[in-house]
Length: 315
Image 1: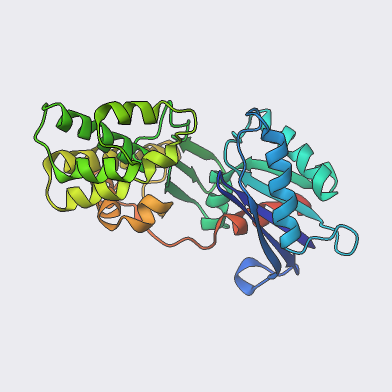
Image 2: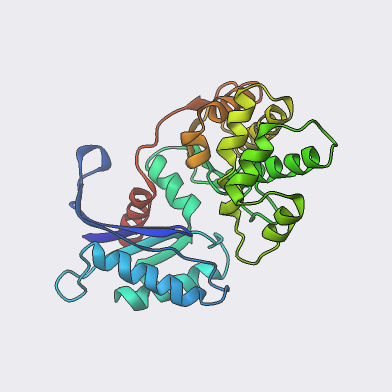
């Protein structure tokens, strides 16, 4: 079977086309045929959302070597930012996939990228993935196949522990520094310099612009974490609050799924690149869920999408 797995974020989309040779995961049943990249996606209901979704699939599949006439796909699955599991967006996105890939509708599926990340990390066992990049989400699955999710409801409503939240809190702190509510610090000059601003009024004018995105807050997170490492008490408090929020999500997922000793994989730029922040999350989780074991992911989100495509085709 020739299968395609997609991982679609807001900045780029990855596609992996692989052949499944009816072996099993541990004995190398997968053979990668091609990998490609394309533009990112937005919410389907956003302006131009469907067009962006179609273009992301078309370009990433094409650069991965997809040719519907020479090498038709047996099944395909996409994990995409903004697609809520169980919502009407899933069948709507699947119909678009079927159209652009020329694959029968019953052999395609669209879901949230957190689910393909979970299936990539744990293709054949229970576990929890904690993702903290620009945004955050936590998702787990137990041995009965039950899933539970915490977080990931968008930056306007949720996201404590995400990089955008670290940056947002840090920027709020600099405004308190600027007007004298707390002592000034070089962190203010660093964050304002990163944004090209010199006054509080300029900061306010910048963040209300429609093109100011969560990623613009997220770029400030490394400065906040570095300041915390240097011992600044307010920056340390931001890191501690964010770490505790992520730990609470993992704990809640573990409790809900009755996982007292879960395997946990941390994903996303904030956890992967901000070492002291990752350590703070580990420390915050231990008293809440002492049996949790941090481990490495078995595969990436494209691997998870391919596993789901295989199950879709074999069901």
